[in-house]
Length: 445
Image (tube, rainbow, N blue to C red; front, side, top):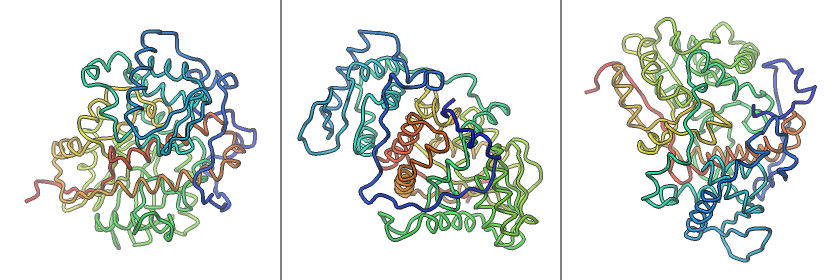
């Protein structure tokens, strides 16, 4: 369980109630420093693998120390340890407890690297910068001969995280039902939890809300949503796309497995006077009923899991009326990286998105084609996601007192900031991409 002990006030809040974080100034110098954490003070009941070090493995610790030192010395990072100060210019990470840092990496690889940050064993005044440097050189950090031995220090994904119908519901709720108020601390007022589409970088003269609306409108245009369109949305979020589609005159059915999202989406839709045009259903995509002129799914495929991608694309095709269009927005990674990640329990799958897997473009093409779908448009905009994540991270850190008041402890706050920075680094280094795709039934000529 990743949430810290909620306050009694947070525990009593009804699911899906209207949320709203008062606007607060975002520090011009960037995100505020992460809260200080001492391993001895970490609640072992909630964070067992952060509160205690993994069992001693001197050989693996020594190997990790050698490999980490070798890798960091080759990168543009300065790494003082044990409180030492250096005057080297460039991105800096400070290792407060070198032994614990190397021991965790030796036993648990990148999960250990993340847990060491959660335990306060290392820090950086530019977390996203450090992680971007590491992500840009991800394939070089371990010497080629040792990469064949990666199975020795990575764990397999837990069987319990499989996205069966029951498992998918549990996995979605473990992330999206944390707290509507938590998400409101860093999302813009539309509560859109996917990449925005900007006109320029950095986004200093454009609101995140405007950029999110631009992204949504582009997807609606791709799917040709207009007056009278029967639209199926797989993955409701907090309802903004359904609202904008209904405002165009569409009749919308939107599916989610998150009870908190569903409740708040219904509340927002009713407040906009569009309840007669939008039906929010707590339903698995595998149980879709009816045929639709358009289907839209925004960053949903990442939560499906590779095992169920055939079922996902089959459901999309089955829901499509003759001549209909499917608009997808997806995060992607390289195919080789995807294959490695699919077999590996990662920091993100352990702490943030259980059961999730980012697909490759090749995987999307293969599984959509097998379901009888053809891709007729495929546009990438990963740099826009990096900018979106930067803004989310700055909002999150600016609202840290609110997050604390909601009952999320310093370890959770470090975990969430690490997740946002880790994701931003993936896009800035081009390890990850974001894409909008248009699919139609049959073979495109």
